[in-house]
Each structure stands twice: as structure tokens, then as C-alpha cells.
Image (tube, rainbow, N blue to C red; front, side):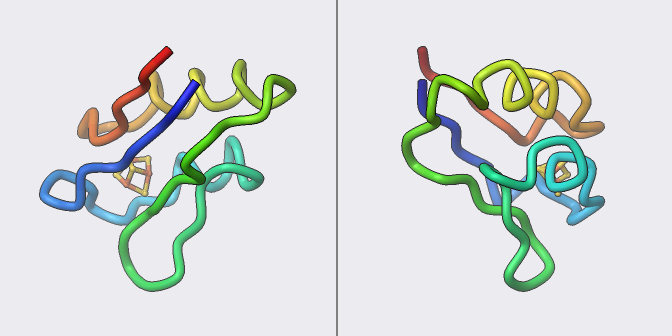
Length: 61
Ligand code: F3S
């Protein structure tokens, strides 16, 4: 699984970082995602994707 955050959509709300801090980071005002998602974090990563209010997170399985 891979996750990416589209910086054109991300508003920096931080929901993804709250749900899955091992994958999503916010070094500045926008979130970025680890390139490859360890299997243990896939469910949380999917939850972060589902909860993003602007659907900025894309997941590739
Ligand atoms: Fe951005 Fe969505 Fe996360 S708006 S900070 S990618 S929850």
C-alpha cells in the first residue's frame, strides 16, 4: 500500500496525523505521507483517508 497527499487539496486540518501519526506528518502546514505503508498501519491509513474532509489522500493498493 502507498499513500500520497495532494497538496492542492490538503488544508492542513491534521486529521490524518491524529489518526495515523506513523504514516502522516506535517512538517509545515500541509500533510505528507510515508511512501510505503507498513502492513500494521494499513487500517489506520485507510481510516485517515476516509476521514480527510477534503479527500486529499490517495491510496494505492
Ligand atoms: Fe490534509 Fe486531509 Fe490530512 S486536509 S492534513 S490530508 S486529513
